[in-house]
Image 1 (cartoon, rainbow, N blue to C red):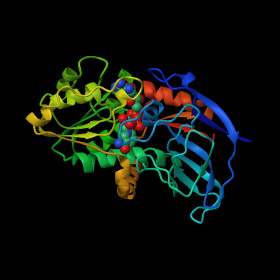
Image 2 (cartoon, helix red, strand yellow; image 1 turned 180 degrees about the horizontal axis):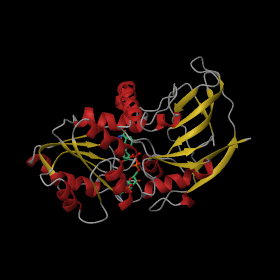
Image 3 (cartoon, rainbow, N blue to C red; image 1 turned 90 degrees about the vertical axis):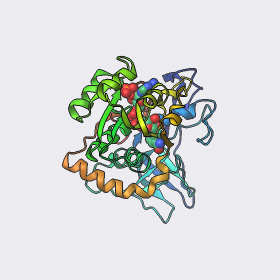
Image 4 (cartoon, rainbow, N blue to C red; image 1 turned 90 degrees about the horizontal axis):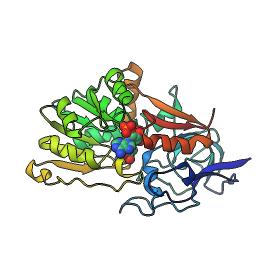
Length: 341
Ligand SMILES: NC(=O)c1ccc[n+]([C@@H]2O[C@H](COP(=O)([O-])OP(=O)(O)OC[C@H]3O[C@@H](n4cnc5c(N)ncnc54)[C@H](OP(=O)(O)O)[C@@H]3O)[C@@H](O)[C@H]2O)c1
């Protein structure tokens, strides 16, 4: 038995292609003192790994991967062998060594921006994979972005971009539950229909026309708050559409991840002219809220107030395909790769 994993074959030139990644094999590692060996069962497919495939990464972010390096990402698995007093064989564990079948987790906690240190997950009767989605990083990001960064209140009109995605679909629904007026944007008529018909969130397709006109059609009086997953032209449109004293949560900037040069907004002076507030954040700064978020979000999932959509790929062979599909907009909701099928 070997440990199959996805690694960077070569630096992408422009958009990521299948040839930039490769499936490789290595011996299954042996745990040393303090270490545990985990058989991964679910891999979280997140856009941020694309940032690390470029030759340089933004100041303050994780370093770039080098050709030959294994990709990493949030994952769930079962402990096969433990030489740590903190874990026992059979434990379900979340961690950051995804994109591989077996993960050797050491004594030094590896995280992605403070999130994802190896932790035992007590899923109870809930599907374990939800702890990579609405009860995990995506849930905490949406939850912290709304309550801590935007300080959302029921009088707000909120725009969520990439609203049919993992974080966006949760942010849009949680904001609705909190009484705000929510509009969303996404990249296809099917995603707009999903938002409108299944989540009850009025939405527009950002490919279908000018962002400003689409926003004005759904929020004629402007917006008070913007949950930014996209950056670039979306952030520019938000700055124009925000009312005085509006707030922006900078969660991500996916439009600049996959080979496109990140485009800064040319209208930043609206921050001054309208007295706007913009704050970036990472879920890893809000892990103290995770238990509270889990209780609340699990309740909404149970009573049907929150709909959780997933796109699932099967097998480590499909992990690269899943990443390419998610970046290109071909997946809806949380994108996952299942290894225990
Ligand atoms: N701050 C944090 O701690 C944190 C944690 C998790 C995620 N994030 C960020 O949150 C954002 C969403 O992450 P996610 O995991 O929920 O991913 P996701 O939204 O499920 O998937 C990414 C989506 O981005 C959209 N997209 C790709 N290129 C685009 C472009 N040029 N313009 C507009 N949309 C584009 C695509 O959907 P369409 O079909 O709609 O184009 C794609 O499906 C990302 O920016 C991510 O980095 C931040």
